[in-house]
Length: 144
Image (cartoon, rainbow, N blue to C red; front, side, top):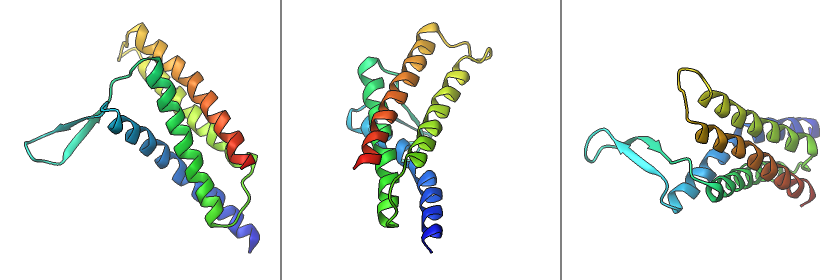
């Protein structure tokens, strides 16, 4: 029974955490008025969200918001299932978030997109900021 709870906690937390990470960044963008909703017709449901890349402050705060939301969701799942948090779950989440950042960098570096050098530099900084924020939050996740 205990092993089943541990397995379910790990699987469920790795499903919930990415959604929480995206929600955390979108909530921060909405609060700071960085989120633009594009509509297809007046009064229609928004079909596209867009957000400018931003500078140093935005990259750091969005990386921190993403890490806080993801690790908080993971911690909540572990708490609800009465399972102690461990470094393996935290490490897996760090790798997931890092892989997403690297994928985004590779996406803007594609030859067909031809992003400017400043956009690539922002993505590189985002990888470092995201890795640092995720590492700091993983320490809090495991210790608290």
